[in-house]
Image 1 (tube, rainbow, N blue to C red):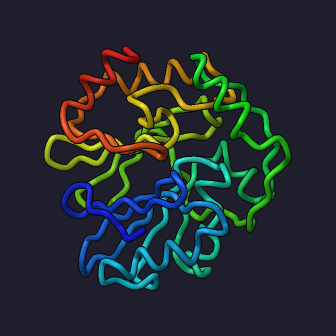
Image 2 (image 1 turned 90 degrees about the horizontal axis):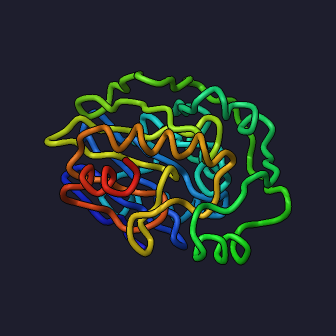
Length: 231
């Protein structure tokens, strides 16, 4: 699937229901947010070329968390030169190149059913790497006018969401929440009480739009939707 421009300068790259995002700053370069499974590397490179750019134009890779469907192609796409950012609490997973299933189903009957059907039971491997940039709560990434790092643990200990301070704000949620059949919890979390607190934290912020690791974007009044669901 070719890259789809969600808002000006932000493209959604989707492979098998797993979303990554690309911020195009023209001559300033490209920032990739999340990097799919290892098997998605070629498709992600094709997506980048679909907007007239090259994978070599990547100037930074920012990962919301250390699950194989979000960091699997990071090492390949970095080429050993593009810096990769990740929260330190997920750093050991990235360096090990393997993750063991520790999650439990998210709230709701449908999440419980889908979790049992879709979530892998065996350890998952991916090309290991040592993150170059430690992302911490409150950091502002110097990309496209500033992207604030919001530590939102629960799905993983080092999960972060990203608030792009453009126009009226755009939230990149990672897997803190999903919007597959409407705004809802993700299929699974390592620590549900912590995840609820993280979602309440996001519900207190202001942003017009939100995009998700899984599901469709919300392009208007997104923070109102978060406040109603998670506040």
